[in-house]
Image (cartoon, rainbow, N blue to C red; front, side, top):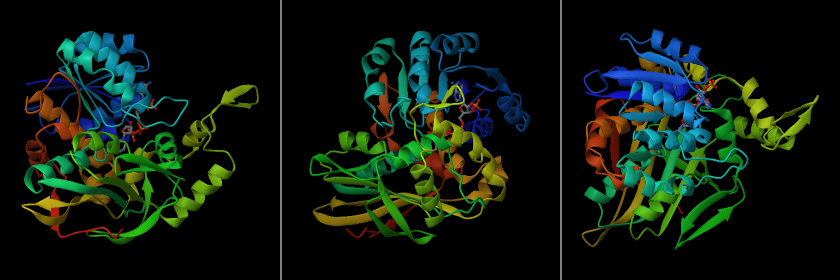
Length: 396
Ligand code: NDP
């Protein structure tokens, strides 16, 4: 029996609230809070059991701590933006409340994806006797759990991991992002990076690509990006020789992005406009479609997984673990597209692991540090079934 406070009522918050509401025996009480309370009320009105809603500015740790004091949840599920991670972690510390998120902290003024700011809470969380679970979405999140599961059941040693992320869906807009446009565009316009033979190798944005054959979708042009789970997996998967992250983009998307970059619309430094300071990327977000609104016409599937190469019982072993998710099915169930769904379901399952005591600890944790088995069982049970493809490799 437990109570959770969800912060953030965007595309992902909608899915988390609805999936938690489907399990009243686990999440007995739910509070949904965000900067715009009307968005929380709209989601609440679509749920057939009562949930509470509230307004909070989560940039303000004191305000968030006061909300936590008022409701006394066991856990805060942070699905606002990465900028709010640290103030929400502070509020959880002040109120001795467990914390979970789906994306690592980023400073608003620089597109940097590093766990150092959140890992720095380790001692304070441990001393206070609470836990923080970082990155409980799909990638990061499920991909980290796939790695822990492969290591536990299929490998004596994993040499290489390729995380491959394909969205083969079509939302019908010439250009839109599938999650918060500001965070998404910051992620893909930064330099790419991968880890090999004990060091990080940096590349120009989108400068390495290849066709990858995705299960149930087929071959798609995929680009090497830096993604945050690489940092924690390098630390936690012993003996790893190489890890890379690949994501698909259509030509139409890349052309729009190049034009937006060339005209300065993806800048994150303030510019003077008619006596105001505006940040071009934030203005761009205001004119692009809201990711939460894309679901209604979305067709096609996502296909995301991890391809492993390593050794079992002295023999080389290659395999892939993956999930395929259908945009239209997600919309039918919770009124969301598959990118919000594949993030929101693992956030709910991560929260379930904590409130049921299946994953417990004191301090700050990444997903691969816990037993993957109960999480993998729940993926099958709650909407993200996974499969194993034996012998799958990626061309080098
Ligand atoms: P949205 O932009 O749709 O939603 C963000 C929500 O956070 C909005 O409701 C917004 O409020 C709220 N918010 C923003 N600032 C504050 C604040 N200061 N205080 C309180 N609430 C605030 O984003 P998504 O739902 O698409 O994404 C949510 C998170 O999920 C992001 O951190 C994203 O990076 C992460 N993500 C993780 C993935 C994974 O696989 N791990 C994949 C996709 C997303 P308002 O409505 O007022 O703007």
